[in-house]
Image (tube, rainbow, N blue to C red; front, top):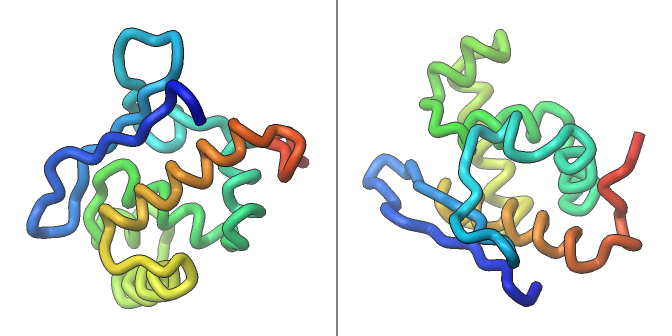
Length: 125
């Protein structure tokens, strides 16, 4: 992972986080929305690496994009209670305690995939 780092700036009291990924050879940090910053293949590889369901990935993407529980619920057509249940299970599954740690764990998995391209390749189905 030489030349790559995860920067977490400003973990808000409500659990929101400003995250960026700095890649080797780029002058500035890479930022953006979850669904555009990482490709579908990269999200599938992260899901395989962390053993996440499709719904858990959708919830993580909403969190990554800074959405509140109500917004994620509306977008996914589920109740806010169900979103909260997914978030709590994600915390348990990934061994984290808040949104900032969750997103840092997702970025760490992404960087791990980049540094070990042969293992759990991002070019999945």
